[in-house]
Amino acid sequence: MKKAAKVIGITLPVLVAVTLVSLRVLGFEPIDQRPGLWLSGEPVTEPVTDWSFTADHQEIFVQTRSPYLMPHSVTTYCTVYDGDLYLFSAYYQGGVFPDGRAWNRNVVRDPRVRLKIGDRLFDQTLSHVTDADMRAAVHETAVAKYPQWSSPGLENVHILMVEGLGR
Image (cartoon, rainbow, N blue to C red; front, side, top):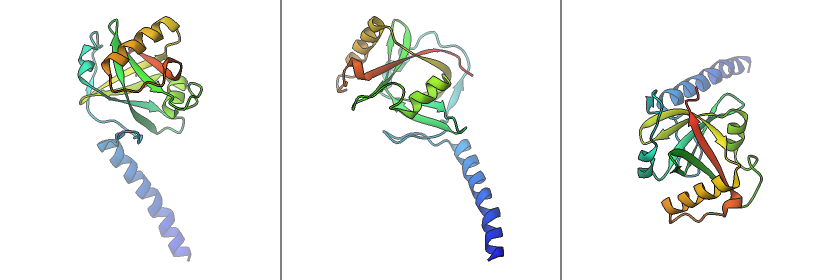
């Protein structure tokens, strides 16, 4: 019995470490509504001055920093308004920002994120948009970009602005 416990005590941590290293190297990206961990791709190090290329992307990935030191990544919609990039977090059943979404809580705690757009990675920071006029204008732009999207209404859509390099 002691031998089995010793083998498990050694083997289990090694398996966990190998699994985490493999996931880190290979990535483990989100799929639809299933969250992921690390994002993989080609890092972009220069500042982005024109986000218009995101018009060609229906969904992008966002990797946040969880409080337990593991990344948490999700898919989301994005749109460009007045040259800036905005991300969306829809609360279809209602709820209070940021409580309804783990990635929103992570962003409020640490606004540094990694975006994956196409095959490229962008280290950025996010801020929650609270100005009513700006929220309405950005939401209108998103509704135009995503005519198939059933928005739960502006009161249940939280908008995050991409502000720049974040790491």
